[in-house]
Image 1 (cartoon, rainbow, N blue to C red):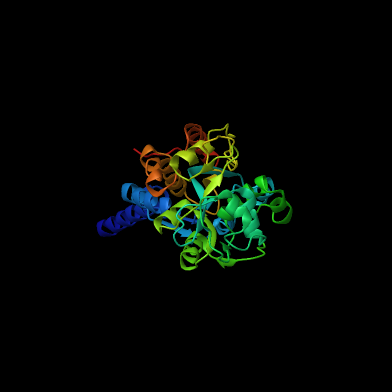
Image 2 (cartoon, rainbow, N blue to C red):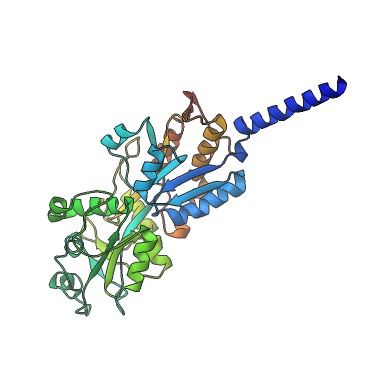
Length: 354
């Protein structure tokens, strides 16, 4: 009987330990996400650091913002990532309330491949004309007028665009719709568009790689992708008439505006005279209440810890190292306030990061 009792006690202890690992061992919880390729270089760094600090295995698939939103909607990942905030209609189509947690700011740049032309000025009208197929060669008078000191080649322009559902495309088309009535009428704003000319490529890495390999090409990509591959990118005219290079300072200037508490906002074509005009926030999307699909409290806690880490000084300080910009003071405070709304079965979940 004693032996049996000992076995019974051991069995009960083992069961309790298993249940504890399932319900309470936060560091053993695996976290999965999918979505935007725009912030991927930044996410690669901070996700690795989070795993090192907290022990959670973290996987992220850069499948584009559209794919990330679908994955979260289907509840196949813990979080989705996007450069395009959800519209009111998209919010209604989700099964429950969604929070948009901004993670950093970035720039969509016009990367181009022209030998011996390391600098170039472009404006919204010309960019629109190129991607609509109206401007076909690099020495077109409209481009030449913006670059009077340059000897532009009589070379065919090859636009490169995204083949997948993309927040980068949304940011790019949102900007062009603000500055080009013709673009707004023909193309509009969206994560996926019907492009009249050019070459399709998947993800920011695909667009950057195609531009790099194609003489005369131009494509829209996150700034880190152009800079890491040493692809030239244009200065773009902002709302004040200044030609601005994308960098940490000019991206931050774009966010120097009043921001909504839910952080669903566009900062393209900012009125700030120092702002790079195709700047944006990028977000991680999570369900406000984490009690769904059999999720444990430990899973909710692990995800909350990740969000809290991303908003930490340590993580934010890394943004500029890979050509992004940390969140502005107001954006960071709004993000922290949003994180306080996360719950599990309607009870608050707070980070337990040290």
